[in-house]
Length: 388
Ligand code: FEO
Image (cartoon, rainbow, N blue to C red; front, side, top):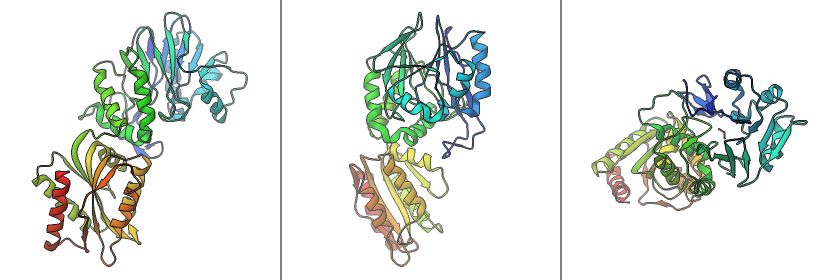
Protein backbone atom coordinates (compact mmCIF):
# COMPACT_ATOMS: atom_id res chain seq x y z
CA UNK A 1 0.00 0.00 0.00
CA UNK A 2 1.41 3.38 -1.01
CA UNK A 3 1.68 5.82 1.87
CA UNK A 4 2.09 9.44 0.86
CA UNK A 5 3.54 11.96 3.27
CA UNK A 6 5.00 14.78 1.17
CA UNK A 7 7.28 15.47 -1.77
CA UNK A 8 10.37 15.34 0.42
CA UNK A 9 9.32 12.91 3.14
CA UNK A 10 8.86 9.33 1.99
CA UNK A 11 7.46 6.29 3.73
CA UNK A 12 9.72 3.29 3.22
CA UNK A 13 8.37 1.01 5.96
CA UNK A 14 6.97 -2.48 5.57
CA UNK A 15 4.00 -4.58 6.61
CA UNK A 16 4.56 -7.83 8.47
CA UNK A 17 1.53 -10.07 8.04
CA UNK A 18 3.32 -13.33 8.79
CA UNK A 19 4.64 -12.80 12.31
CA UNK A 20 2.99 -15.22 14.74
CA UNK A 21 3.41 -13.13 17.89
CA UNK A 22 4.65 -9.54 18.03
CA UNK A 23 7.34 -9.30 20.72
CA UNK A 24 6.77 -13.06 21.12
CA UNK A 25 3.59 -12.34 23.07
CA UNK A 26 0.93 -10.38 21.20
CA UNK A 27 -1.30 -11.88 18.53
CA UNK A 28 -1.56 -9.55 15.56
CA UNK A 29 -4.24 -11.03 13.30
CA UNK A 30 -3.95 -8.06 10.95
CA UNK A 31 -0.16 -7.96 11.15
CA UNK A 32 1.98 -5.00 12.18
CA UNK A 33 4.01 -2.35 10.38
CA UNK A 34 7.61 -1.38 10.93
CA UNK A 35 7.71 2.24 9.83
CA UNK A 36 10.76 3.94 8.43
CA UNK A 37 10.91 7.36 6.75
CA UNK A 38 13.28 9.09 4.42
CA UNK A 39 13.73 12.88 4.26
CA UNK A 40 15.23 14.02 0.97
CA UNK A 41 16.93 17.41 1.20
CA UNK A 42 20.46 18.73 0.65
CA UNK A 43 21.30 16.05 3.16
CA UNK A 44 19.35 12.80 3.31
CA UNK A 45 18.08 11.61 6.66
CA UNK A 46 16.65 8.20 7.36
CA UNK A 47 14.30 8.03 10.34
CA UNK A 48 14.82 4.54 11.82
CA UNK A 49 15.19 1.21 10.09
CA UNK A 50 12.93 -1.85 10.37
CA UNK A 51 12.82 -5.29 11.93
CA UNK A 52 15.14 -7.72 10.22
CA UNK A 53 12.01 -9.63 9.15
CA UNK A 54 11.18 -6.78 6.77
CA UNK A 55 14.73 -5.85 5.83
CA UNK A 56 14.75 -7.02 2.22
CA UNK A 57 11.60 -5.18 1.25
CA UNK A 58 12.68 -2.10 3.19
CA UNK A 59 16.02 -2.05 1.40
CA UNK A 60 14.21 -2.09 -1.95
CA UNK A 61 11.97 0.78 -0.82
CA UNK A 62 14.97 2.71 0.44
CA UNK A 63 17.02 2.30 -2.72
CA UNK A 64 14.04 3.20 -4.95
CA UNK A 65 13.41 6.46 -3.08
CA UNK A 66 17.10 7.35 -2.88
CA UNK A 67 17.43 7.21 -6.67
CA UNK A 68 21.18 6.82 -6.46
CA UNK A 69 21.78 9.19 -3.53
CA UNK A 70 23.34 8.12 -0.23
CA UNK A 71 21.99 8.28 3.30
CA UNK A 72 23.79 11.01 5.23
CA UNK A 73 22.13 10.54 8.61
CA UNK A 74 20.32 7.71 10.31
CA UNK A 75 18.26 9.01 13.22
CA UNK A 76 17.84 6.22 15.76
CA UNK A 77 14.68 6.98 17.77
CA UNK A 78 14.53 3.63 19.46
CA UNK A 79 16.90 0.69 19.64
CA UNK A 80 14.38 -2.10 20.04
CA UNK A 81 15.03 -4.62 17.26
CA UNK A 82 11.66 -4.04 15.58
CA UNK A 83 13.12 -0.67 14.51
CA UNK A 84 16.87 -0.95 14.84
CA UNK A 85 17.13 -4.47 13.41
CA UNK A 86 18.43 -3.29 10.03
CA UNK A 87 21.05 -0.80 11.24
CA UNK A 88 23.76 -3.36 10.47
CA UNK A 89 22.59 -3.59 6.86
CA UNK A 90 22.38 0.18 6.55
CA UNK A 91 25.99 0.53 7.73
CA UNK A 92 27.04 -2.03 5.10
CA UNK A 93 25.19 -0.13 2.40
CA UNK A 94 26.37 3.33 3.50
CA UNK A 95 29.52 3.10 5.60
CA UNK A 96 29.81 6.90 5.45
CA UNK A 97 26.50 7.38 7.23
CA UNK A 98 26.38 9.36 10.49
CA UNK A 99 24.30 7.74 13.21
CA UNK A 100 22.28 10.28 15.18
CA UNK A 101 21.19 9.35 18.69
CA UNK A 102 21.47 10.46 22.29
CA UNK A 103 23.96 9.43 24.95
CA UNK A 104 21.81 6.46 25.97
CA UNK A 105 21.45 5.33 22.36
CA UNK A 106 25.19 5.18 21.91
CA UNK A 107 25.71 3.47 25.27
CA UNK A 108 23.42 0.61 24.21
CA UNK A 109 24.02 0.46 20.47
CA UNK A 110 27.23 -1.63 20.67
CA UNK A 111 25.21 -4.31 22.50
CA UNK A 112 23.42 -4.86 19.20
CA UNK A 113 25.94 -3.89 16.49
CA UNK A 114 29.62 -3.31 16.00
CA UNK A 115 29.66 0.41 15.19
CA UNK A 116 33.39 0.94 15.38
CA UNK A 117 34.49 3.20 12.54
CA UNK A 118 30.96 4.55 11.99
CA UNK A 119 30.39 8.28 12.53
CA UNK A 120 28.17 9.12 15.46
CA UNK A 121 26.50 12.38 16.38
CA UNK A 122 25.17 12.64 19.90
CA UNK A 123 22.19 14.95 20.35
CA UNK A 124 20.55 16.22 23.53
CA UNK A 125 17.18 17.67 24.45
CA UNK A 126 16.20 20.57 22.21
CA UNK A 127 19.18 20.29 19.85
CA UNK A 128 18.62 20.45 16.13
CA UNK A 129 20.15 19.27 12.89
CA UNK A 130 19.69 21.09 9.59
CA UNK A 131 19.27 19.05 6.42
CA UNK A 132 18.85 22.10 4.18
CA UNK A 133 15.20 23.17 3.99
CA UNK A 134 14.28 20.76 6.77
CA UNK A 135 15.37 20.93 10.37
CA UNK A 136 15.22 18.06 12.81
CA UNK A 137 14.62 18.98 16.45
CA UNK A 138 15.23 16.31 19.04
CA UNK A 139 13.27 15.72 22.22
CA UNK A 140 14.08 12.99 24.68
CA UNK A 141 11.25 10.59 25.57
CA UNK A 142 12.85 8.20 28.06
CA UNK A 143 10.72 5.14 28.86
CA UNK A 144 8.22 5.80 26.12
CA UNK A 145 9.09 2.52 25.80
CA UNK A 146 12.85 2.18 26.43
CA UNK A 147 15.26 4.59 28.15
CA UNK A 148 16.97 5.79 24.97
CA UNK A 149 13.77 6.75 23.11
CA UNK A 150 13.65 10.18 21.54
CA UNK A 151 11.21 11.83 19.17
CA UNK A 152 12.02 14.20 16.34
CA UNK A 153 10.08 17.25 15.26
CA UNK A 154 10.69 18.41 11.72
CA UNK A 155 9.82 22.07 11.88
CA UNK A 156 9.42 22.94 8.18
CA UNK A 157 6.71 20.40 7.45
CA UNK A 158 5.58 20.28 11.11
CA UNK A 159 5.94 16.54 11.38
CA UNK A 160 6.43 14.74 14.69
CA UNK A 161 8.28 11.45 14.34
CA UNK A 162 6.85 9.96 17.51
CA UNK A 163 8.71 6.62 17.91
CA UNK A 164 6.42 4.00 19.54
CA UNK A 165 4.05 6.78 20.64
CA UNK A 166 0.77 6.74 18.68
CA UNK A 167 1.67 3.29 17.38
CA UNK A 168 -0.93 0.69 16.49
CA UNK A 169 -1.08 -2.98 15.66
CA UNK A 170 -2.20 -3.90 12.15
CA UNK A 171 -0.71 -3.70 8.66
CA UNK A 172 -1.02 -0.35 6.89
CA UNK A 173 -4.13 -1.42 4.96
CA UNK A 174 -5.80 -3.22 7.90
CA UNK A 175 -9.50 -2.37 8.03
CA UNK A 176 -10.68 -1.77 11.54
CA UNK A 177 -14.43 -1.57 12.17
CA UNK A 178 -13.85 0.19 15.46
CA UNK A 179 -11.36 2.63 13.98
CA UNK A 180 -7.83 3.49 15.00
CA UNK A 181 -8.42 3.41 18.74
CA UNK A 182 -9.18 -0.30 19.08
CA UNK A 183 -5.78 -1.69 18.12
CA UNK A 184 -3.94 1.46 19.20
CA UNK A 185 -5.38 0.99 22.69
CA UNK A 186 -4.41 -2.67 22.84
CA UNK A 187 -0.93 -1.68 21.69
CA UNK A 188 -0.68 1.20 24.17
CA UNK A 189 -1.73 -0.55 27.36
CA UNK A 190 0.19 -3.71 26.74
CA UNK A 191 3.41 -2.15 25.50
CA UNK A 192 3.63 1.33 26.98
CA UNK A 193 0.97 1.07 29.72
CA UNK A 194 3.42 0.95 32.61
CA UNK A 195 4.96 4.24 31.54
CA UNK A 196 2.10 6.71 31.98
CA UNK A 197 4.23 9.42 33.62
CA UNK A 198 6.87 9.46 30.84
CA UNK A 199 4.07 9.61 28.23
CA UNK A 200 2.54 12.56 30.10
CA UNK A 201 5.95 14.27 30.06
CA UNK A 202 6.20 13.73 26.31
CA UNK A 203 2.67 15.08 25.73
CA UNK A 204 3.66 18.26 27.60
CA UNK A 205 6.61 18.73 25.25
CA UNK A 206 4.44 17.97 22.22
CA UNK A 207 1.93 20.60 23.35
CA UNK A 208 4.56 23.28 22.73
CA UNK A 209 4.96 22.23 19.08
CA UNK A 210 2.80 23.08 16.09
CA UNK A 211 2.19 19.57 14.76
CA UNK A 212 0.43 18.83 11.47
CA UNK A 213 1.39 15.19 11.07
CA UNK A 214 2.37 12.41 13.43
CA UNK A 215 4.58 9.69 11.97
CA UNK A 216 4.81 6.79 14.44
CA UNK A 217 6.94 3.66 14.17
CA UNK A 218 3.89 1.39 13.88
CA UNK A 219 0.62 1.96 12.08
CA UNK A 220 -0.84 4.79 10.05
CA UNK A 221 0.42 8.34 9.69
CA UNK A 222 -1.97 10.66 11.53
CA UNK A 223 -2.62 13.88 9.66
CA UNK A 224 -6.03 15.12 10.67
CA UNK A 225 -8.03 15.59 13.83
CA UNK A 226 -4.83 15.25 15.88
CA UNK A 227 -6.62 16.49 19.00
CA UNK A 228 -8.57 13.23 19.07
CA UNK A 229 -5.46 11.05 19.18
CA UNK A 230 -3.60 13.29 21.59
CA UNK A 231 -6.69 13.41 23.83
CA UNK A 232 -6.84 9.62 23.96
CA UNK A 233 -3.15 9.44 24.81
CA UNK A 234 -3.72 11.94 27.60
CA UNK A 235 -6.58 9.82 29.02
CA UNK A 236 -4.67 6.57 28.72
CA UNK A 237 -1.39 7.83 30.15
CA UNK A 238 -3.06 9.49 33.11
CA UNK A 239 -4.82 6.19 33.96
CA UNK A 240 -8.24 7.77 33.66
CA UNK A 241 -10.98 5.44 32.41
CA UNK A 242 -11.94 6.11 28.83
CA UNK A 243 -15.53 4.87 29.16
CA UNK A 244 -18.01 4.08 31.86
CA UNK A 245 -18.58 0.35 32.01
CA UNK A 246 -17.66 -2.91 33.69
CA UNK A 247 -15.28 -5.62 32.61
CA UNK A 248 -16.25 -8.99 34.11
CA UNK A 249 -13.14 -11.17 33.74
CA UNK A 250 -13.45 -14.79 34.78
CA UNK A 251 -11.19 -17.80 35.26
CA UNK A 252 -13.29 -20.95 35.25
CA UNK A 253 -12.11 -24.57 35.29
CA UNK A 254 -15.29 -26.49 34.44
CA UNK A 255 -17.58 -23.63 33.50
CA UNK A 256 -19.32 -23.00 36.84
CA UNK A 257 -17.41 -19.81 37.67
CA UNK A 258 -18.09 -18.70 34.10
CA UNK A 259 -21.84 -19.23 34.60
CA UNK A 260 -21.75 -17.11 37.73
CA UNK A 261 -19.85 -14.39 35.85
CA UNK A 262 -22.42 -14.39 33.02
CA UNK A 263 -25.27 -14.22 35.54
CA UNK A 264 -23.54 -11.36 37.30
CA UNK A 265 -23.13 -9.51 34.00
CA UNK A 266 -26.87 -9.89 33.41
CA UNK A 267 -27.54 -8.36 36.82
CA UNK A 268 -25.38 -5.37 35.87
CA UNK A 269 -27.22 -4.95 32.57
CA UNK A 270 -30.56 -5.08 34.42
CA UNK A 271 -29.26 -2.22 36.53
CA UNK A 272 -28.58 -0.15 33.43
CA UNK A 273 -24.77 -0.26 33.49
CA UNK A 274 -23.64 1.53 30.30
CA UNK A 275 -21.44 -1.25 28.98
CA UNK A 276 -20.72 -4.74 30.33
CA UNK A 277 -17.99 -6.87 28.76
CA UNK A 278 -17.50 -10.50 29.83
CA UNK A 279 -14.13 -12.17 29.16
CA UNK A 280 -13.00 -15.76 29.59
CA UNK A 281 -9.38 -15.42 30.66
CA UNK A 282 -8.59 -19.01 29.75
CA UNK A 283 -9.53 -18.53 26.12
CA UNK A 284 -9.49 -14.91 25.08
CA UNK A 285 -6.54 -12.81 24.08
CA UNK A 286 -5.07 -11.63 27.39
CA UNK A 287 -3.88 -8.38 25.79
CA UNK A 288 -7.45 -7.59 24.74
CA UNK A 289 -8.75 -8.17 28.26
CA UNK A 290 -6.02 -5.95 29.70
CA UNK A 291 -7.04 -3.25 27.25
CA UNK A 292 -10.64 -3.50 28.49
CA UNK A 293 -9.56 -3.41 32.13
CA UNK A 294 -7.97 -0.01 31.49
CA UNK A 295 -10.73 1.17 29.21
CA UNK A 296 -13.60 0.92 31.70
CA UNK A 297 -13.96 2.44 35.13
CA UNK A 298 -14.98 -0.77 36.90
CA UNK A 299 -13.96 -4.41 36.86
CA UNK A 300 -15.21 -7.60 38.47
CA UNK A 301 -12.85 -10.56 38.77
CA UNK A 302 -14.42 -14.01 39.14
CA UNK A 303 -11.95 -16.78 39.87
CA UNK A 304 -11.93 -20.43 40.76
CA UNK A 305 -9.79 -21.52 43.72
CA UNK A 306 -6.82 -23.63 42.69
CA UNK A 307 -3.79 -25.09 44.48
CA UNK A 308 -4.32 -22.89 47.50
CA UNK A 309 -4.61 -19.78 45.30
CA UNK A 310 -6.52 -18.79 42.19
CA UNK A 311 -6.77 -20.50 38.79
CA UNK A 312 -3.55 -19.64 36.91
CA UNK A 313 -5.01 -17.55 34.07
CA UNK A 314 -6.49 -15.17 36.69
CA UNK A 315 -3.17 -15.03 38.53
CA UNK A 316 -1.50 -14.25 35.24
CA UNK A 317 -4.07 -11.58 34.38
CA UNK A 318 -3.71 -9.81 37.73
CA UNK A 319 0.07 -9.88 37.48
CA UNK A 320 -0.15 -8.38 34.02
CA UNK A 321 -2.36 -5.60 35.37
CA UNK A 322 0.02 -5.07 38.27
CA UNK A 323 3.02 -4.77 35.97
CA UNK A 324 1.13 -2.35 33.70
CA UNK A 325 0.38 -0.11 36.70
CA UNK A 326 -3.39 -0.68 36.74
CA UNK A 327 -4.86 1.94 39.07
CA UNK A 328 -7.73 4.33 39.83
CA UNK A 329 -10.47 1.77 39.34
CA UNK A 330 -13.28 0.14 41.31
CA UNK A 331 -13.19 -3.65 41.55
CA UNK A 332 -15.55 -6.38 42.77
CA UNK A 333 -14.58 -9.96 43.60
CA UNK A 334 -16.35 -13.28 43.04
CA UNK A 335 -14.69 -16.54 44.04
CA UNK A 336 -15.58 -20.17 43.61
CA UNK A 337 -14.27 -23.07 45.69
CA UNK A 338 -15.42 -26.61 46.38
CA UNK A 339 -13.79 -27.27 49.75
CA UNK A 340 -11.55 -24.39 50.84
CA UNK A 341 -12.29 -21.25 48.76
CA UNK A 342 -9.13 -19.16 48.61
CA UNK A 343 -9.39 -17.33 45.28
CA UNK A 344 -10.80 -14.11 46.75
CA UNK A 345 -8.00 -13.74 49.29
CA UNK A 346 -5.40 -14.39 46.59
CA UNK A 347 -6.94 -11.93 44.13
CA UNK A 348 -7.39 -9.28 46.81
CA UNK A 349 -3.75 -9.60 47.85
CA UNK A 350 -2.64 -8.65 44.33
CA UNK A 351 -5.27 -5.91 43.92
CA UNK A 352 -4.23 -4.42 47.27
CA UNK A 353 -0.78 -3.67 45.87
CA UNK A 354 -2.27 -1.40 43.21
CA UNK A 355 -2.63 2.34 43.55
CA UNK A 356 -6.10 3.69 44.23
CA UNK A 357 -7.97 0.46 43.51
CA UNK A 358 -11.15 0.38 45.57
CA UNK A 359 -12.53 -3.06 46.31
CA UNK A 360 -16.26 -2.91 46.85
CA UNK A 361 -18.16 -5.17 49.25
CA UNK A 362 -19.61 -7.68 49.51
CA UNK A 363 -17.26 -10.20 47.97
CA UNK A 364 -19.15 -13.23 46.67
CA UNK A 365 -18.24 -16.83 47.48
CA UNK A 366 -19.97 -19.64 45.61
CA UNK A 367 -19.38 -23.27 46.45
CA UNK A 368 -18.87 -25.36 43.29
CA UNK A 369 -22.00 -24.16 41.50
CA UNK A 370 -24.09 -21.01 41.73
CA UNK A 371 -27.41 -21.59 43.51
CA UNK A 372 -30.50 -19.55 44.31
CA UNK A 373 -29.04 -18.91 47.74
CA UNK A 374 -26.08 -17.14 46.11
CA UNK A 375 -28.31 -14.67 44.28
CA UNK A 376 -28.91 -12.15 47.11
CA UNK A 377 -25.21 -11.54 47.75
CA UNK A 378 -24.56 -11.35 44.00
CA UNK A 379 -27.40 -8.80 43.73
CA UNK A 380 -25.81 -6.81 46.56
CA UNK A 381 -22.46 -6.77 44.75
CA UNK A 382 -24.23 -5.83 41.49
CA UNK A 383 -25.90 -2.91 43.30
CA UNK A 384 -22.56 -1.78 44.67
CA UNK A 385 -20.78 -2.02 41.30
CA UNK A 386 -23.64 -0.42 39.35
CA UNK A 387 -23.75 2.42 41.84
CA UNK A 388 -19.99 2.95 42.05
FE1 FEO B 1 8.15 -0.76 18.43
FE2 FEO B 1 9.44 -0.48 21.54
O1 FEO B 1 9.44 -0.96 19.77
